[in-house]
Length: 280
Image 1 (cartoon, rainbow, N blue to C red):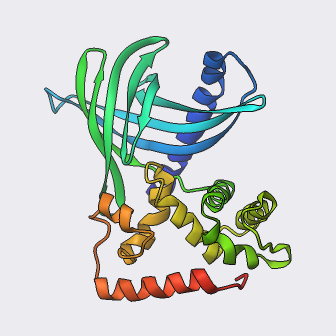
Image 2: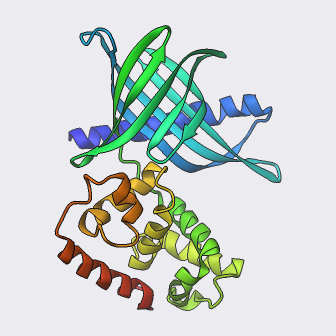
């Protein structure tokens, strides 16, 4: 019940970030209304506490959401980072955001006045991802700890990642293209073929080939918390798989296990991904 409640809070916060920041705030800053947008990556998204750097008995509950989105401006697109911080009963906007490989930083604004800054780093503790770091706000310094909410890829978002990956690495997607039923295609280099892959994986997000390609894509995008969650369980059991090398270097605490067993399993999985043409 508690996990379900936290998931609902995470979803609500994600909606709050996109609705309250991306739509009206970016529309105001970019001088346009009715923006179309899609999430490019999600940085920190969750709730936790901020503890005074000088008085451990002084702490506040906080919620934070940071995302990078692609905004459509007529015939042009631009990537913009946006975020919200809620501390106590006050909501702040986050700007000048940098989403790195397991790090997020930026400035805190009240209306159009900067009132602080923050910097946090991700670390897995057991089954949970925790962001820890520092924050200055209204002249006070805080240590912050945020439990990351499990915001996974939506089917449409995963399909988009797969299509982008196939455009950059068509050789990785050849057998997937040949195995997507009656709409199969031969040349992944062709946009129409990648569109068929997109459609297939959006309709079948749990297909083993779509999952594998999404994981290959995610190894290059560990700054996206959705990718971290996409890889976590798989890499926990298969730390030597090529999809997991970068993840396990970043989060070594997750990738513990018997190497001999995981190597054998990884080899079998890779063979299945590269050679199967079934639609199952």
